[in-house]
Image 1: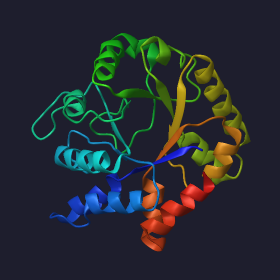
Image 2: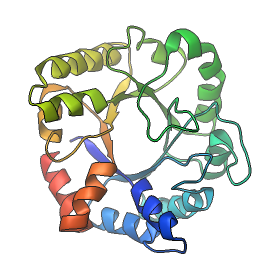
Image 3: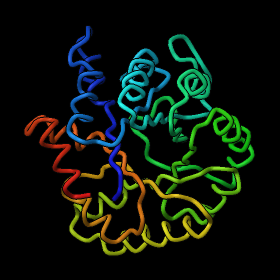
Length: 247
């Protein structure tokens, strides 16, 4: 079965919009795990607009105590600054099960593209090696149409995470046939290169089953925005269980 890692960034967005501690990120993560989620994902950014370094430490303690996976996403090229030690120092302190590297800029609202392996491979290679030396499984955020996606294996990554935004957009428009074929091909290419396949971005209850029925052997989906949005209506417990039913 494909595993579900719940991204709790949006809980932190709501908290930070008011200040204080409510809604509580840790309590939300506990609710997701109590409902059966297999892990927790966070994407701390240098501007601390949602998940903070302090949240990362607290969630690491929770996931360790619960014996579930913790996945930290982030841009490995972003330099440290006040309140943000940098992705690799965070991972060194926490030792998450998985580090997902994403090439997002400081001003980006959300991640919307994968790595350019023609330009990024040599910079990625030592960073991937450093993360693996910490005991982290390493996944690289990749566009399904990237002609060089096999190079993720060459730089030492264990997995790729397919950026599923284009699929979700096509699905919402009513015809995802071409996109499903593209993503299925990408998954098979990655697997032939020895890479595991994760997926994430704009996956939802509406499109998840269609995606997984066409794209082979997806190991993990990381879902945040849609799941938290749906949970506003139905509650976290019911929403997480609805996703698990689809998986």
